[in-house]
Image (cartoon, rainbow, N blue to C red; front, side):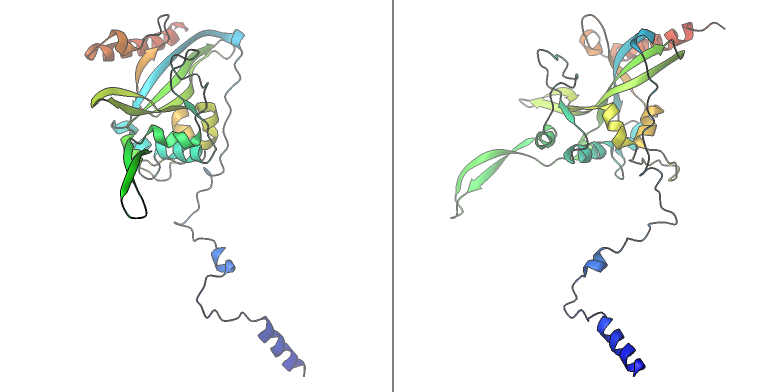
Length: 285
């Protein structure tokens, strides 16, 4: 009698056959297998290491420079890797509301458009990259009745440069001369009347805010898949090649405003060397 009762209980609790071959909720919640022999969680759970606090009274020297990172250079290929593009990381975070994009349009209060003064809605961010195309409109009879302008498809490979705004400061309290990145902007090509007007920032990202996103995004390198480096790491460690396009000056001029050709490269190197010389002159040997 007891054995028959146990058999009846087992049959009652048995899973019913799935005749329609549908996916059950239990099957959807099954964890995916690990793609490899270990699970990389050190970067996914990483936290930002905060900067050392700097008081304005301890800053003996400060110089703001703007520099550009060309992803076509060999050292910068990691920023354009299809597995983890920098532009993809930024765009996904902006569209998800994790990062704030600031409009780079010049205004009266912000002539350079890089003071993080005007928030760019997420819906308008994509329009900064894709060219406008004419989309025809049809009625129910299939007849064209008009057209409207719409943003074309965004190609992440079209972003080949990023601009960085940073401050070089000497903190006498810690006896440290260091750069601190303030903002990052993807560069887009501007065309008008079939003429190439050069490149300019599409929008600006405030770097102290972006660090919380970058620290959880791994980068890929050609030599080692287990580097454990995040985008925050390679920016903090200055693992990129760049050239200076502007330094702070009373006339607010860019290098290309008063130099041309190879002289622009020489001027960029001059600014870089002056920063290095300032640090060397701080110490006596």
